[in-house]
Length: 197
Image (tube, rainbow, N blue to C red):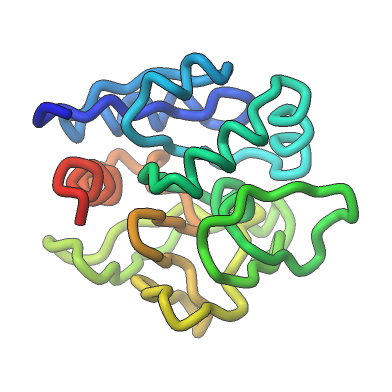
């Protein structure tokens, strides 16, 4: 890989466009990914916010679930926001019985933990490893992390709840940084992809 990574955004459902813009602002080549052959062409992937049960059903329908699991298991860097965090969880609380996840982070996630759509909010979040002060996070029917395994690093909390985690080259946030115009979380992820650290 050269110094400009190609990062896909899973484009089955959710706020794909905003992630493509934020990744481009962070000096990555950003592409929508809907099919296994498109997934094979990217160095890393962002799984956007949206509706996690719909996203998992569409992943099955589009033949993407197993290719996604294989790439995550194979070490591809992945960043999930909100529903993407749910998709990257090894275990869910309050998930539907038929809901599939990709796994990738040894964590238990509670869906819709911060409340319903009308309880959405913005907050300043101190994020370990990001300079320049707190990042703004938009929480929309957001999950939180109930617990993490020994290999998981907690990067941010809000109101006593874990809202950003990293395990190896897999990153997840409860909130949507792509909706704020602050591209520092995306730059952090692009740097993870570029350096392999």
